[in-house]
Length: 166
Image (cartoon, rainbow, N blue to C red; front, side, top):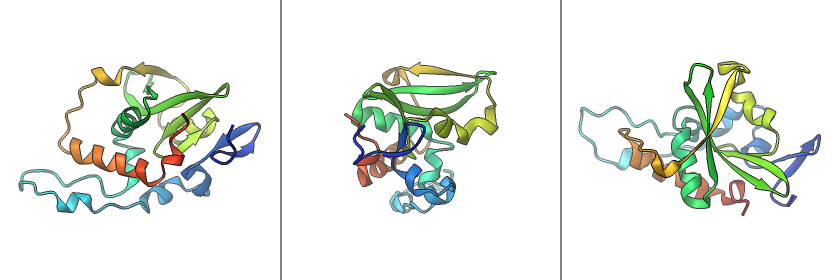
């Protein structure tokens, strides 16, 4: 792997991005990436408050939008982790690079599935499925879709080296 973009961290695995910066507190790291974009958008008083104030929402809540942004920018295959009862838990991009799978989401990229999945393991345990998604067939209708997509792309553009492996 290109060690300029990925850092080795043990057992032959590599990671980059916020994985390398977070020092075990990913939520705090992602919450420091704040956005004021919601404040500049006019909306009527019946709309809910904009959820896109920081990057953490793209780990828990709008990971599907971030995965869609990864697909639009890099054309990665997009996968969805579902719990045993079929509930969606997380969407992410995946890319094969030099014989290793790279799992990519708002945190950056890692070749270690255990590191990637640790964020969700307590929520769904070890009984889950991972399904390839055809992102072009997905219709996402949420109140803040357009601004969510703009901010997801903004995060990618801040550090494209965290997400680009082509």
